[in-house]
Amino acid sequence: MGIYEKLLTLQAKLKVPKGQYSDFGGYYYRSCEDITEAAKPLLVEVKAVLLLTDEVVVIGNRTYVKAVAKLIDTESNGVVEVDGYAREDESQKGKDVAQITGSCSSYARKYALNGLFALDDAKDADALPPVQQPAEKPAGSQKPANNAKRQPTAKPAGKVTSYQMGQLQALAKQKGVAVDSVVAGYKINNLQDMDTKQWAQAMNSLRKRADAQ
Image 1: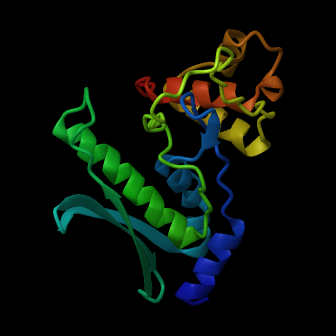
Image 2 (image 1 turned 30 degrees about the vertical axis):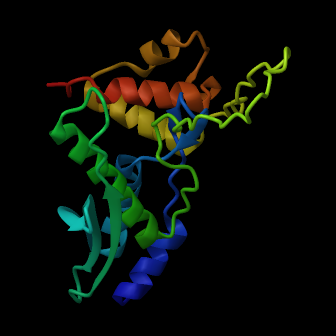
């Protein structure tokens, strides 16, 4: 099996649910970590290695992080690589330079992985609130009395898949946390009753914990 046949197999088999939830946008998305974790067992299966690297580049007067997702065939040393870019925003309040660059790196790597594995990710930038542009008012215009601001309606969360349940169980075991205690925290009977929003919250909470000794 050549490098492109292996890539074809990965693209056909790789399934990465959008398990992260954006409180700002009210939608689900997948992270760079979600993609790499889902790809690892398939990479072993096809005997290939995934390498991610990035560098800071200047294009015009803008600073970007350029990420490269590289698929390497361990049997033939064949290589396929895809680039992804994300621009650094120096105006992000509350973040230092390292945090801004790190955030851009995650986005750029995810874009590169999306291109390599043919994953669609229509909604970005994931967890950031949308930029609100002030509306221009015509001269002499009056604001209508019933001009109530409409709030976006979030799509109801669906039930978790068996793949997502396996991810949560594996992470809970790694962190030394009983799955029953996670389930109890959401006042549901079992893991199968968990919805995707609860799953995303539980995964984010577990990732912040130290690994079990």
